Structure formats: C-alpha cells, structure tokens
Length: 184
Image (tube, rainbow, N blue to C red; front, side, top):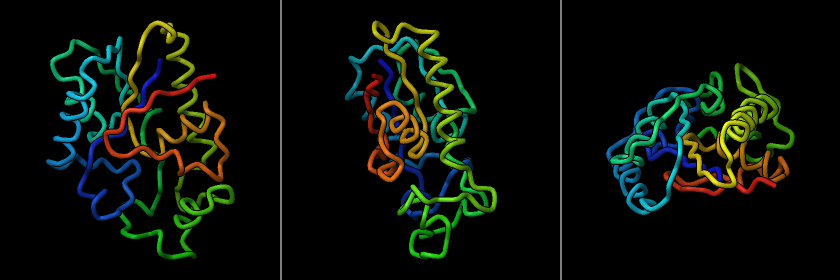
C-alpha cells in the first residue's frame, strides 16, 4: 500500500501565505503534530519513505518515523506545486483577478502565469514517482510512505483515484494527515 502524509504546520500555513517550493520550516506546533502522528500510527510498518526535499516535509518524515530504522529518500518530484511569483503572498484567494483565486476556486479553468506550475506538470511528475514505487516495491505486500505537501498529495490522489480536476481541492489533506492511496 502507498500512504501519503502531508507535512506539519508552518508559520506560513497560519498566515495563509502560499508556500509552494519556498523552503519554509515547520513551526513548533508542526513538529509536535509530526511526533503525535508518528505515535498514532506507530504500528504501521513501512519498508521505505520517500520525501520531498523541502525542509518542512523532510522534518515531518524524520519526526514521524523517529525510532524506526526506515530509510528516507528525497525526490524532487515530490516538491510542492510551484506558485511562481505568488509564493509568499498572503490571502491571495481574496482577489478574483489573481490567478491564484482561479487555481483554488476553479481549478478546471486555471491557466498558470508568472512561473506557476500547471496541473498537468504536477500530475506528470508525481505520477512518475508513484509508478517508480510500484515497480520497485510489491505494494500489495509492502507499505511505502510518501511525505510531502498539500497540492502534491492532492495531485497523486486525483491521478490514482480518478478525481475530476474541478474537485481537486476536495482531496486536500490536513497537516500531518495520513492517507491510504487507493490504486485501482
């Protein structure tokens, strides 16, 4: 089975700032969330963990798996969706003329601008990661953990559970939520 885990809370999550590929660390609550999630799922056995190379995901993976001898492999394909020049912007969802508004409210008509990543690019890179995992591990018998980000995890869920693009954000995981991917 493949499991997805979104990173713990950051200060930018609290301030509703778009993080994207900007490398923001966990805050103290985010670290505690990762530790608590690790305790909650301590009986879940994983053969391997793949993580985004961004610090908030790497730190979440390390804290979640603390005390277990499980390798954590970083992979750039697991980075968060790139929001281009809109990274660091607070409350971008309030301006209907901002492409970020369309990204989050009408993803089916979103067109990337100013360095933003498209959904197609996100789906392609995250799906290639999942396909590599499926070729490397017998996921019917082994559990593999992927630690990453909100849009990144939603991209994987939408690709493998056949969720329509208009419903993309309905799959958004909460911070430190563990999700069992249903691969059909």
